Image 1 (cartoon, rainbow, N blue to C red):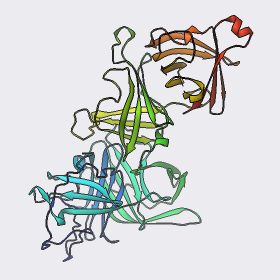
Image 2: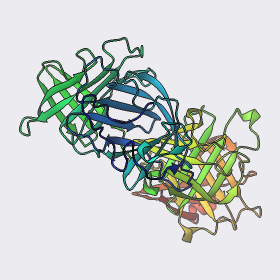
Image 3: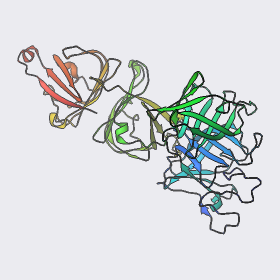
Image 4: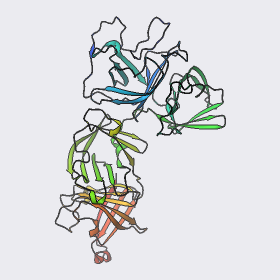
Length: 496
């Protein structure tokens, strides 16, 4: 059966993980986990406990749903079936921790995650625990639990992915530096063939000259035909902003970015305006506000075919282990769209990309077709999401959103209107093109969508916008007389 036991071959004692018994362990079996509060945020770079400098067993879970597992024992040869690289995709049940994998490349024989048995994964007291029902008896025995410690990014230490790999190709090029002066290089071309000599794993030791940054390596195991760091070359390594690794090799430079970084999303990371990349006349955004609420806009389909699922939604949210929970729906005007249905949702943030996972089929697993990508909207000058100060309006919610495609949306959910121009309470959104003159003159252009019943900003004769730091002042006039008398309505907004 597949397992994470280190195949030490000639050694008489197997190196089992901390907390695992030997074959004669009489401790009671542990049932397959079925908990609702386990930590399943397994993203990270993990090294197996109980090993030594003569063997390797490590695994990286990436936030994009892929994993890399490497295994070498101290007697391994290049053709040893128990040593090498496994690469694939994974999904994890957020409630039970059940781990499901699909292999893209597998050259490490009967180790790793490719066996047809039940696997479970969770983080317990900072350790990754992988449980495998190797004997397929429906329970997890004490010798079927494997423990890993996280290798936290620090300088060159950590896992790195080659920047020039095309994300659309099935290709893997990466390097990892462990905190015990070992390194790992992995490479798989788009042919995904185990018969390609250049596909595989390189493992060895490394040292860096602290004065010159020269990197020297001593390969111990090499199954990728001289790729990686095994060739005799002069190399220098430097890390910039703790996020990018540059390897200067002879006359060439190669750039790598950190991967497998365990990241917990918090409210500050979510804060602001996020937009899906859709057509020119479609608008799907998520805004996370400083008061712990979110606002979702939905405008999809052509203008002539838009139905009841377009509009806005406003509610309160919370975060727990990268799970996005909607605690209360305050206003829901977009039908079955948005976040109002009771399903599992997860969030991951990488650079300026928010990935929203939605468990649409209710199996507690986020599949690849249940991931939705949002990009962080620009937030400078007037661009970004703005919320009216509570002291300025009687409404429950007033928002302005300025986007870099010269469109603007205005959202209100009222109890009482801030401007006494109608007796009809305004609850909805209008989305328009706009121009902003050098003098702050704000002009609405083409109307792209409106769910306000006609009570939008086009009512005003003149509008002016002034931005100073993180404050936006909106001043509107009802007619030319009010302009002449500088007698307008003023609302002050804070950047979110």
